[in-house]
Image: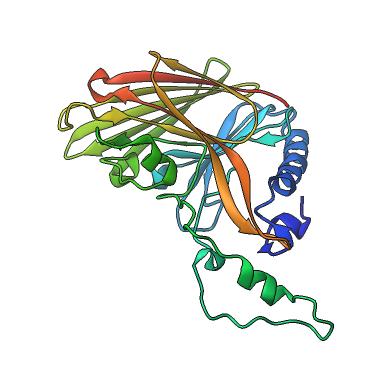
Amino acid sequence: AQCNDAYWHGVFGGLYLPHLRDAVWAELARAEGLLRAAESPTWELDDLDADGHEELWLHDPTYSAIVSPARGGVVEEFTVFAHGINYANVLTRQREGYHEAAEGRVSLHDEGGTPSIHDLESRMRLNELPPIDPAPRVFLRERVLPAGLEEAMYRRGDFDPLWEPGQVRLEWSAEAVGGGLALTFRAQDAGVTRMEKRFQFLPGGRLVVDYHWQPAGFDPGTVFAPELSYAGPMEITCSPAAPTWNHDIVTTAKSERALEQTVQGSSVTPRWPIGLGSARLEIVAKGR
């Protein structure tokens, strides 16, 4: 898991190659599974990524999950030990320097006339800038989206949510329940609970999320839309049934040959009418 190939980015590979990250996460899953084999479901609070905010780390002998109260109660890791998969192993699409169009570059060759790495990079230019994400990709993030938002704009990340939990203070509580762990977040705004979400992390890679939200203040046609960004096989059930937007999460990165597009995972976004006021997601992680 300490092999550095998946931790850097350059012309010859690194972070943008999913199979390298998958291999690292598989080793971490195997190690953590051994360490947690005899423990009961539990949670702990610590600043795991040293960003000045504490995260919640939930785990039992079958899974490990990290949830960030400071970033809207988003799920940032969801690893199932038996499958060797972190289902949150998806990259955020961001701007790289070589995405920008450049003119007037000098072509550099070595003494034998072979194009150098600088020359290869100078040829890697796009006619159109690739999409970028409006916020870091996580396994599960909730938003309220405007009525007129088109699916093509959503795919490109070209939108601003009307509201999301990270905009207000979140209260949270955790408890053991039914052989698993329950984690409840409440988004308070001017004394009103705008949204409550309750995670139930169950053994073996099952996650149930119950949502309750306040429709008042939003226009008709507005939708409550949690986005799942995930890598690996997964069964997702919406209750009640909802229309969904689905697309591959594709990044554009340089290799030794050219700019290459790579599928980093999948995005699924149920779109419940804002007037509904409540809904449920049931998620079952599958093995490959």
